[in-house]
Image 1 (cartoon, rainbow, N blue to C red):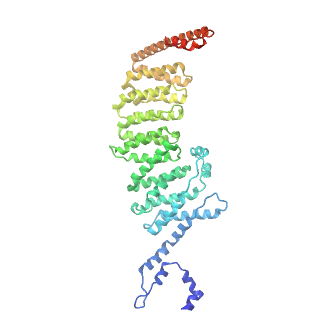
Image 2 (tube, rainbow, N blue to C red):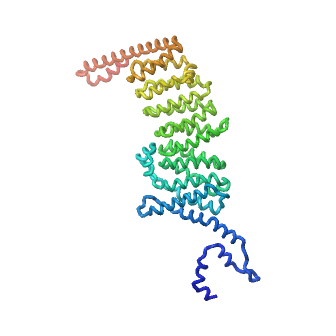
Image 3 (cartoon, rainbow, N blue to C red):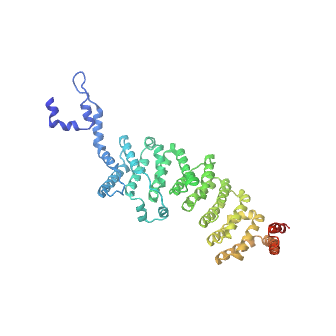
Length: 468
């Protein structure tokens, strides 16, 4: 026995790591015969069937930074080929994947996907709005590997029973996945959106947690950082979620509209995600038209003072909301909406003014304005007349002329009375201006007269004259 133990021929058996060897080395029973374990046969069958896949998964766990000059390009290409082999295996499984395969695959995906993202810069924020593939590739050199990893994860979510996969795709996994929406690579965010949405639709037991997590991202963006690249993609997911809400809406969902969606209108980067935001807001109003008042007042509350691009977008959103709100709320909302549209009609920015004037082509908007004609017309007529008299843009003046014709035909007598009221206001304003000028002239004369003799009492004399 000692010779066998020291012979070179016995060493390969000593280095073997298979479970079969462990069973062979088990102690004998009382009869001196070896105990046979059926697991040894299963293990060898498992290794013969999935050994190559485990080898591929192990190879894919190696991470490349794509910035280290010592990394071999050929090794990167080999890893990408291995990832594609794994993807082809996961795409169409003949039978459900065993736990011994699922666990290492998910661990490998976590190692590849969950990584620290580079800090954002002004240059990359600008690139976010472009679709130049060269610029995007410079932002994410690891995308050739990440793309296949996301495809593998998507196939796992689609093909494996959620009750089995929940052991590996747990809440910390979802939190890490959500944090990747800050990536400035639009292709990665698109893949993330598909995966995250599929998880939400299939893993019903995680829905409340996923909604809460997304809400935290929105609130952190609105009230703290105002920096996040994936707000648009998250709102797209929410648009699909809202579309599936049952009517009447739960109080939780109404609070989401008031506390999350409405404040998102005040973000500096709203232009990037406004399309998705407007869709979500309109989905709520379509399901419950009574929420139209909440949405309209919230938008008017966060109306920009100097950002003309945001004004153009919000005018369009108001127009869409008017088409969906409950007609019973027309009388409450007509005056604040028309007042804001009238202010935009007088904007010195021609794009804002023209977009506000085009709103009057909407039949539903005209119907709403007509419901409160006596209160709305004075505001609108004053805005129309100011444009015709003072606006610098000829196109704006032409559109204003068309709006004037339409309003005049609606109620000529009311239009004339509004003109008379305007003339009276202008007369009173002129009289106040004359009085103010006369006071200043008296003040200047008194100052010139008393300057040499009573320099210390000039201020008291001036205040006395102004109080008369």
